[in-house]
Length: 207
Image (cartoon, rainbow, N blue to C red; front, side, top):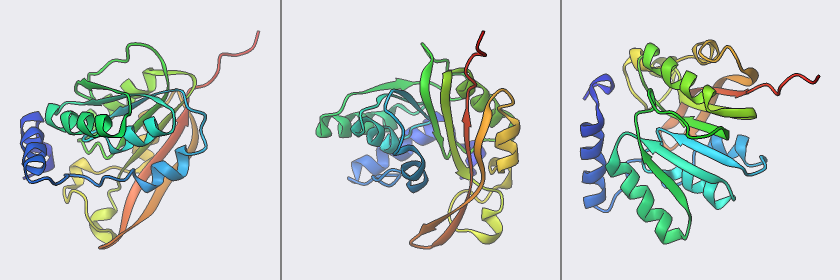
């Protein structure tokens, strides 16, 4: 199935099929880049946007964050909610589209991991995420890079839903770039090439 054609019904079916076979669509472990870059942060309020089954949201909650996991597939959120209950964790699970979702109040962190959308839709989601940040808040994004088709493994094989670090930076002009570029991620099948972004909302200017 082409990634661009996958809507919420498609993802719901995929999550339900995996759950019925006692399997998982995604790894149960948090993304390694997320762990490397967010472990040292002081816990606060966070949103895992396009959370899927919530693996990164659960990891953040385990570290003391107050987390809202947002996804347009209710079946994925249901899997995450069940895991949270088993782990004794509190996470708010919210069904919404990442491109139109709006934060109820500013947050300290917005995480987007592998939201593979055409450029215009991805830019809308990134703008929404940036707008949700409190002053000093951090946006953390990791997506499959366009180069992954040529020299990486896994991920969508449709360049239209892959991205570059430059594209991520250009979508958040009001944020200060902390780090951005390509990230080589080791997998059992080889090295995957990701595009990553860490960007912070500026603090108000001192009087």
